[in-house]
Length: 325
Image (cartoon, rainbow, N blue to C red; front, side, top):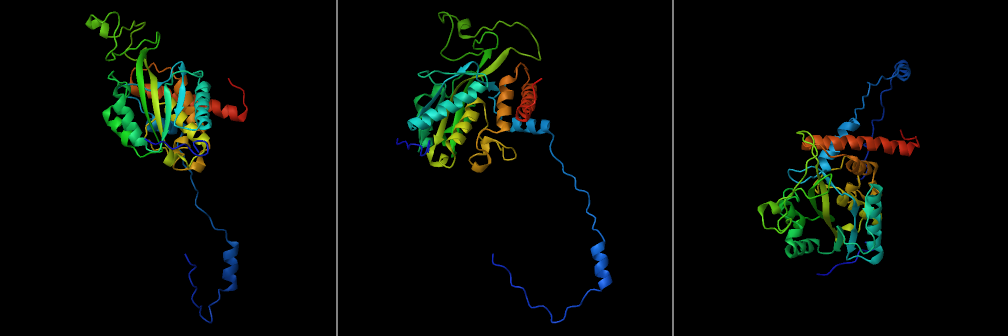
């Protein structure tokens, strides 16, 4: 399969007026004067905008794509970003930019030589590449653990999508206190694997509640494929920021964000977002600041939405130079 290096850091006629009559009737001077002196009253114009809370919840509902039956996942601890099939400068730029965004969210970027858990691959035949990767290591995409991936239908879309960038994320339910895996993964077990109980994870509950949980979902690996035939219309920073957005959060590839200012619109409107927007930064900050301890998915999203609302307030204060509370 040939891979193309990313160029430049990737890399109505006016209508004719008919003749007027020779003599046009003239308005009476008094009438004309009266028309000029009498003001024309315009009806009141009411501008109706969506409340910020409503917009935030709409954005979360549109872009968030948790795995079936699970809550929103995010990275915990550190990330290691790798890039392949790119010029050295382009690869390093994407790695550095995604790592910088991750560090701003409180994550620890991997050092040179680390094993990537975020892998960005460029190709001039992205569908063929995606299909080959799935065929070679199917368990890397469909793990088999409950709620760890988007399922086979989404995987088929990943292999056949005609998009400038496509991605596949795997997440793992874990014990928030210990970090231990909280779901059975085929092929993994404890002790000597001699008992059925060795196949199942053991989670020591510190509290019992029907409303809250200590099981949270963490991202485990993300694969991003860039179509160099379509990605050349955006700048290196726009591409890197787009990759950061879709690799640091679970983003729906079919999300319609056209009514929001977001880097997710960059391939449709390259001139509208030079980098991650306030909407994007607030979303990521809100996700990474949220406790995610709500058992019900709807309540979990509401908690993330409220966290995003606080992030919007902080961003506004930063831009205005106001002191933090």
